[in-house]
Length: 289
Ligand code: ARG
Ligand code: ZN
Ligand code: CA
Image 1 (tube, helix red, strand yellow):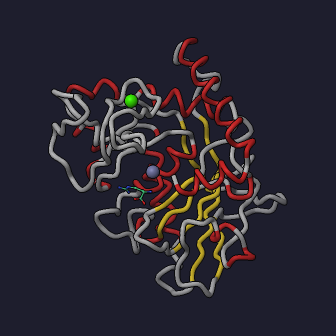
Image 2 (tube, helix red, strand yellow):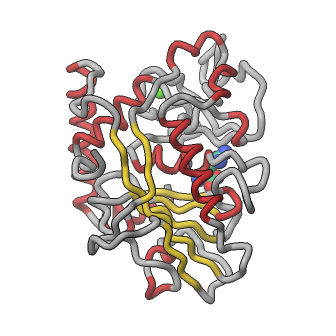
């Protein structure tokens, strides 16, 4: 959210484009949930691995394990979805989005979709510096055609951060901590199921946190089928966890847009999928097919 507020100040048009997108989401909600994109959208992704040590140079197998995890989570084929409390099982929804490593680079040359970029920096704060060669990171590929994923060592205990739709193209994409990326190699419990990327790409497709970044029950995530929730949840909460008069079922802490451990989050809801699909019809309409 720090990154988001900074960008809103730097780029007044971003605020406008976000407002337009909200308008579109509302229109979409009134028109019913059927998407303009009939079936499943495949989004080409490029992974920029920014490394100094050999540990940070995550192997192709680890990158592929991340893609596999994303494709389960975004198609609601993740086996752990059966752990959703029975009251909410009916809300578990296929986002109709999948991800594939890019096979062509921006110039049309064959690529594996993974770019290894050495750096001299020990870690990156959440200031977008990893997104430019000039600041020790890697330049992104055109964000109207690719999902940019930067994988690096992050400062301050961050697992990742993302940019919402409508922001500056050069910094568009998601950043994920190397040790919280994928399910093999250096991926480390409790963040070793690839869900940091699931969460960050949720933001990239316009999802807000389920507690809506306010701690007084007045905020909204603009999603009608997630209960209003007071705080982020961490670890592995036990159902139900009640806040904001949301009993008896309480917080939907098993939603990907909370802050629980990877093995405690397993769902997007129907209305979250409407928001994601609305951004694919709107500001992200040029990406994927
Ligand atoms: N931006 C969040 C953080 O850095 C990401 C949370 C992801 N949660 C997870 N279980 N992987 O804390
Ligand atoms: Zn988040
Ligand atoms: Ca809600």
